[in-house]
Image 1: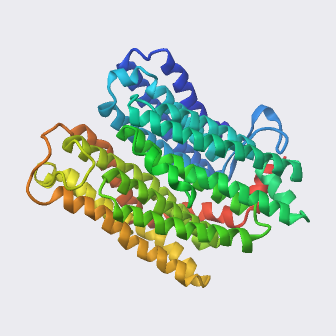
Image 2 (image 1 turned 90 degrees about the vertical axis):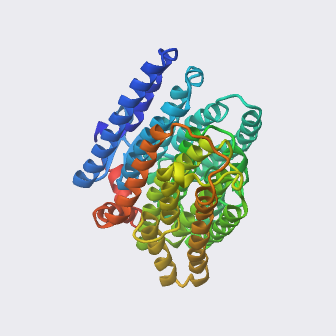
Image 3 (image 1 turned 60 degrees about the horizontal axis):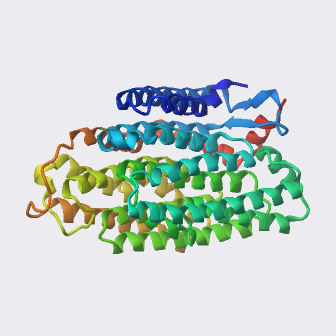
Amino acid sequence: MTNAVIFPIAIPLTTAVLLMFCVKSLRAQKMISLVSAGALIAAGAWLVRLVDHEGMQKLDVGNWPAPFGITLVSDMLSALLVLTTSVIALACLLYSFFTIDAKQASMYYYVFFQFLIVGVNGAFTTGDIFNLFVFYEVMLMSSYALLVHGGTKIQLQETMKYMVINVFSSALFVIAVGYLYAVTGTLNMAHLAVRISGAENTAVLTVICLLFLIVFGLKGALFPFYVWMPGAYSAPPAAVLALFGGLLTKVGVYSILRTFSLIFRQDVGYTHTILAWLAIATVVFGVIGAVAYRDMRQIAIYNIVAAIGVMAFGISLMTEESMEGTIFYLLQDMVMKTALFFIVGAIAYVAGTNQLGRFSGLLGSYPLLGWAVFLSALALGGIPPFSGFIGKALIIRAAFEKGQLLFALVVLLSSLLVLYSVMKIFIQSCWGEARGYEQKRVVPLYVPIVALLSLAVLYGVGAEFVRPYIAQAAATLVDPSMYIESVLKE
């Protein structure tokens, strides 16, 4: 048992409380947030090292042993996600320092920012499914406040829609948890896996599994539940959008990954086939939207949808190789989607619009910004040696090995369309005659953009260094007995 598991939750929680007492001082808020972000990265890196050297880390809160008490668990998957979340949080903070003014900051912007990180890290480390719901609610309540931050008409309108959808999904989550407890008598994930593996009435469990798929599909933007995203994500400031794009939907993906590999393994032939079809539909509709729109934000948003489909398809295959590919792709997508929204926000800042065709020639005045778009296109399109290639390649190869030829070809084709959709931003905004934009100071925005793009490139080039950690994370998913024994041992 170790206290290291709680630090990724305790650090942002403590920071949020401290920030409540200095909302009138922008300088103090920035300094405290920056120190906290550094500490959070250190805690995430330490957790990865502990899991690598000592095995899975567990904390029984209040010394109540699992499955009776609240358990926080960190295997390699959780540790990697916490570390990546910490890096993204720091990048979003740096972007916020330049784009969020004193008035917005005084409305508890950085407080809600920290509470959102509490919810995300809590979801990644909780060991029982009810507290997964609790951390979802912490995350969602914070996202409501951040989404409406600024108080424009469109923000208020989209926040109401977003709240209605999430109130419905939260109610469905509670219902699903209640049914699951009624059938199994437990909510600890490891204990659920044991109880369900020996259950006789698998039909009821399959229905409960599909209820959870709807819940996580709504949270993670899986087809046909993604319809809330294009409107909701078009409203907030760029820094908030980048935070949402990098983290929120990925919690939904993680939830599917964890529950479908650990808990709901009783009817894989049925439940995971449904997941595969929904995943491919998500890919198709995501790339159609990305190709069709001329609004840069919408292009980036629909690229999120397409990526969610790829990851969900990898989960549905349930092989060690597909799990490795899914985890690899999940981590790189968190980084790259954040970077893409930073870039789109910076372009919109100098051009005054998100609509392609109203400006051009940015490459002459903002060469770094232009080439950042180009590198993002290559990474998101899965062009080797960039980070997007390796995850997709593993998923596609696993699909071929399982005989899923058609689905593998759809994922492969989607890479070309994703590449085209982002290259469209590069060609139409960066080439041609310089027009439709102003000369503005954007150097501070380059820092998080360059940092994340550099990380993405290193992630791809240094894949052999990262691969053992990914393989360790995937092994726990393919063989859940390691997770179960670590959690339930006294």
